[in-house]
Picture 1 (cartoon, helix red, strand yellow):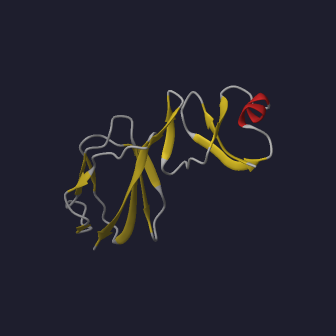
Picture 2 (cartoon, helix red, strand yellow):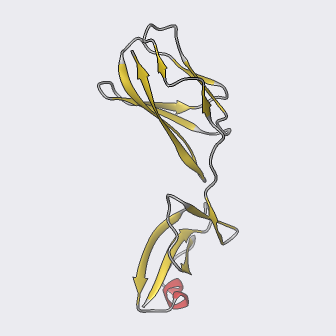
Picture 3 (spheres, helix red, strand yellow):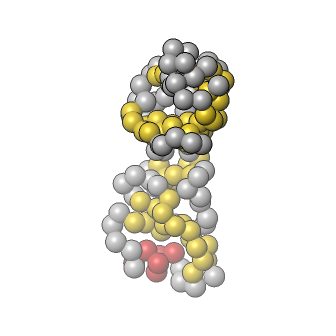
Length: 135
């Protein structure tokens, strides 16, 4: 039995891991471009492939000036360090999800008191996740 990982050769993203009775080269013959198989287990939450080499996903150098703020439409959380092309998603416990491009710097302002989950994504970087409390 052989541990394997299938990844997208164009993006480097891990698509699947598993175990097979074939060799990895036999498994590769059954795949279509851009899928590629390698021996071993690599995980999408931690790894990607850069020029066919398994690589740890880097972190974004994101900072928040605070995580608790007043829900008055004026007070805000300042978000800095997002890599160009990042997407910001904000989901409240009692409000609908909103997402869009994340500028550097960016700001979150609301008039609705709630606990919000802020996620900033930009593959291959690891997602940045923080909890914001609007009181």
